[in-house]
Every structure is written in structure tokens, then in C-alpha cells.
Image: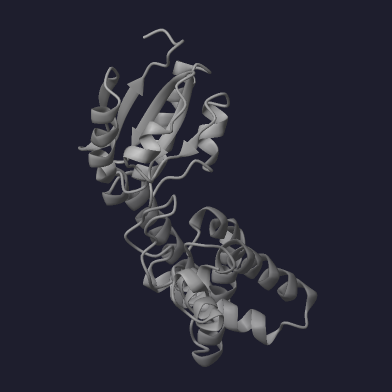
Length: 274
């Protein structure tokens, strides 16, 4: 179904999914999907050792330890991203991080050993010191990037869709069972998202993406309606407000960035208290 929606053959679609799910470790930015990093998981100098470690593990695949290590790494990638929508699915792929670190360590150590065998005059302590410095430099770089630098200060990890579902779900929970949550969120937000059902279990969240006179007129009015729209669908929400007057219009800003998180129109039902 996903391949059909993308107008691709199933095999070509799987190849694209595999490429997106694997290159994010070493080459492509980790944008979107609950992560939002403008760079790959690994910097290029560490990515080299991941490749070395992967090659070594594959070469020794018959050994149980390497077989388990490869399975640990590739299971989340394949089952958690390649075979799901919107690859790379960072929230699932990152469960392969411990295996990734071990593969990097194997690649680094085996590379150091090969250098030692080629240049016999080099001291093992010197090689160990170089490896330690490389690891320490990488740790410092990543800590600075994720917790101090660009990634942190730009709020790149804060996805507008996540903020929408959280804020709207919280607001729907405050309104209570007397209001029915209707979402004008296509193509970004859908009622099946877990936040709505967790934060507002009695709101009976539904998608309301076809907005016209007929669909608006057919809405039940036995209780209030909480319409919530993503910013790109604000005109549809205005159509609702024009056809169903008497409600309250809200514009909710984003919490840490400029812009609007969502637009809302809260319409009391016939039996609801305004």
C-alpha cells in the first residue's frame, strides 16, 4: 500500500526505505520523525569505523557473537524502519545504538591493530592513546552539538506535529467529555495519534478533513465540538466558524518557537454550557 501511494514498485520502494534507514547512520541528515538532526547519527570520522566494524562482523558472521551483534543492529533498522512508513523512523532505529557503538569500537580497534602490524615500531600505548583521544573528541563534539550547540538552541528536535497533538490533546482533556474533538489536520495530523486518546480519552477524536457545507451541516450538536486545525488548514476552520456561529476562536502559539501551534474553534452544544 505504501509503495502504491508513492507510485513505486514494491521492490524499488523497499530499496528506497533501506537506503533511507541505513545511510542516516553515516551520511544523510536525521531530519523529521521525532529527531530532527541536521546531521547523521555519526560524524564522518567515526562513521568510517562503523563501516570497518560492520565489514569485520559480516566476515566473521559464523561466530555466534558477531551473528548476534549484526542481528541486534539490523533488526530495529529493518523491522522498525524499512518495513514501516516514513523512513528513517528514528524513534525505533535508535534502539540499535548500543550495537552501533560496539561495531564502531570493533572497527576502531581492528584498524589500530592493523596499523600496529604494519608499523611495528609504533608503541601499543601510543595507539591506545590515539584511540582514546579520538573517542573523547567525538564525545565532546556530540555533547556540544546536542546539548549546547545548534541542535539544542534551534529546537530542531521539537516537531510541530508532536506539539500540536500534545497541546490539542491537553486542551481536549480540559474541555472534558462534553466536547467532541474534530481534527482538521490532513496531511500532518490524524485522530489515530496516541496523544489524543491518552490525554483526552473521552473526546472521541475524529478526523474532519473534508470541510464543506454538507459535512458541516451533518455534524451532530448534542454536545460541544472542539475543532482544531493545523496552520495550513486555517481557511477550512474559518469556513466552519462562518457556517456555525456562536463559538470561540483561539490561536495557540508554539511554546519555544515563533508561529502558531494550532487554531481552534470551540462550539458549545445544544446542551453544553458555553
